[in-house]
Image (cartoon, rainbow, N blue to C red; front, side, top):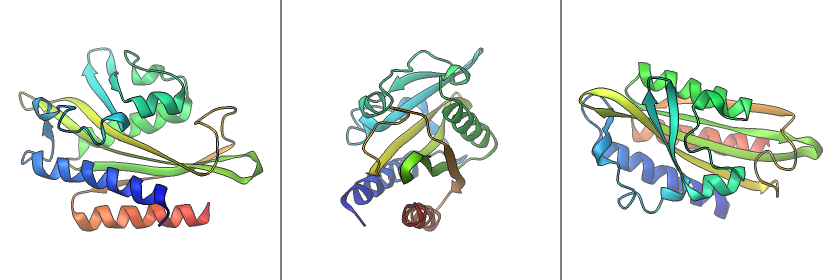
Length: 187
């Protein structure tokens, strides 16, 4: 594994471990457990989404995510995200979290002209307050190994290939990481 791949695995393993230690019997995490000081090592890569009457809304965007997109989406509804692929990815993951009580992972790559690839991985779980889903916590990582630019800059990708998986056990997590590594080899 490259240095970037090792770092990405460590971030997602920390996120998985946090979920494992704090999940309730229904597989979700109480909103009050989310303290960025506890999640310090992964906080720059965190996105928090609140469930509101208008729809899911971004409430916290980590500094690494803001740097990557060159935009801060705090306060926007997920359906208002300016990039269609991000809207679709997040809405699909939210739909999965509403139906299942496990971690949801989406990983894949954006193909840019000239065979440049930018690999991304998002892992997420639902948050609860008073036994109802109140929002979602997402860890976002980007691997620039074969692409020097930031996401969507200077141009949008010509193709997107992504895989969405459910994670309940360490074996599921390891399988997801293997799939991500394999995708990286293909890119």
